[in-house]
Image 1 (cartoon, rainbow, N blue to C red):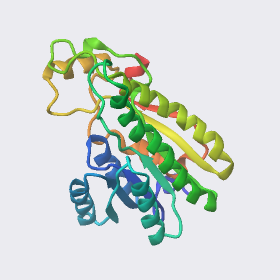
Image 2 (cartoon, rainbow, N blue to C red; image 1 turned 30 degrees about the vertical axis):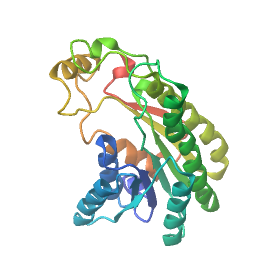
Image 3 (cartoon, rainbow, N blue to C red; image 1 turned 90 degrees about the vertical axis):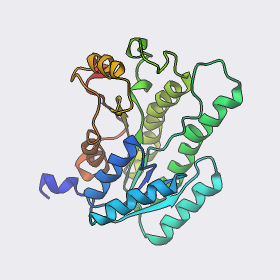
Length: 262
C-alpha cells in the first residue's frame, strides 16, 4: 500500500460526539472527507442536522443522531442504533463536552459533579461500549479531544484588559488533564486488542467574538504567533484515525501552535 493510501478512511465507520461546535465542525469535515461513514451525535440535534446536510451535499455519508451524555440510556441507545446499521465499528472521537461549571472555584459540590458526570463518567461509558465492538474485530482507533489547558497552568496575562475574566473554573483544567491520563490507561488495556487510543490537545481556536486584546495577547504566547484556524485539527484527526498511525497509541499530541513548548 502506498503511504498516502494509508490515510484513507474508506470503508470505516466512525462516531464523533459533538460536531457542530468550533472543534467538532472541522473534525466532522475531516472524517467525512477522508471517506468514513460518519455519525455525529449530541443534544443539539438541529445544529447537527445542518452539519450532516452540508456534508451530504458535498457527497459524503454523514448522519446526525441524538445523544445526551448525561444519560446512560441515551448512550446505550446510540450504541444500539449504530450497531444495528453496521457490522463493524472503527473510529470513536470523544469530542463533546459540557461547559456547565464555569467561573471561579467557590461553588457547591453539585455544581462540579454535573460537569464531571458528562465530561468524565460518560466518557468512560461510551468508550467502553464502542471499544467492545472494536475488540470483536481486533482493530480500531479512539481519539480523545483534550486541551492544552490540561497540560499547563492558567496564563492570566492572556485575559488582562478584556471582559473574559481572569479566573476560569478549575474544573476544565482538571477534566482536560484527566483525559490525557485516561488515554494512557485505556491504551494500556485495549492495546492487546490492537485498539489504539490517543489524545489531541488543541490550543485556542480563533473565534471572531474574541476581544481583539485577547487575540493579540494569546497569539504572542504561541510560537507560531496566532490562534488555531478552522482547519488546523483536520490533519491530525485523519492521521490518528487512519492506518497511517498504526503504531501510535497512548500519546497526547498538542496542536497548539507551540503554546505548551514556549
